[in-house]
Length: 162
Image (tube, rainbow, N blue to C red):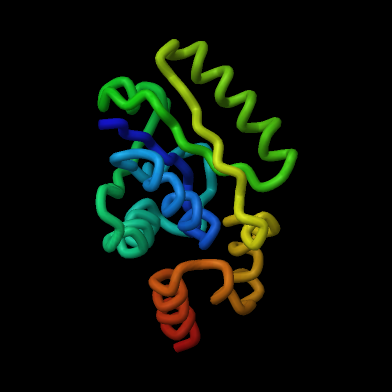
């Protein structure tokens, strides 16, 4: 059985993330969507909210599991005995960042391997940070995030308006 990990902040989870998961699970027997918690980052959504988004989004996909981690990714991977990390690439600038991360992780753990998936063209133009900006200005996000996230965010906006 070949397992892989797909780490990210998922703040919030996007349809691009969903696309990567749906494609990766056709290659690997088991996929762990790993929601990162890093106290050096400012998140729009709490860890609990981001985990909820991921669990609701992937609950119907067999062999996809959701977990969280704090600290070095390779330490989590080593503890779980999972050598493969799945990463999505949208644009050229993603590759430069991902290459630096892959080299560093390989130096930290020689068993580390990375599997890149090129983004579907319809998801290449947006990111979680762009979705957060649209949310900030109360823009329409339905085409960017899963329905479970849309419903949650609409509920939050209604509560904020009261």
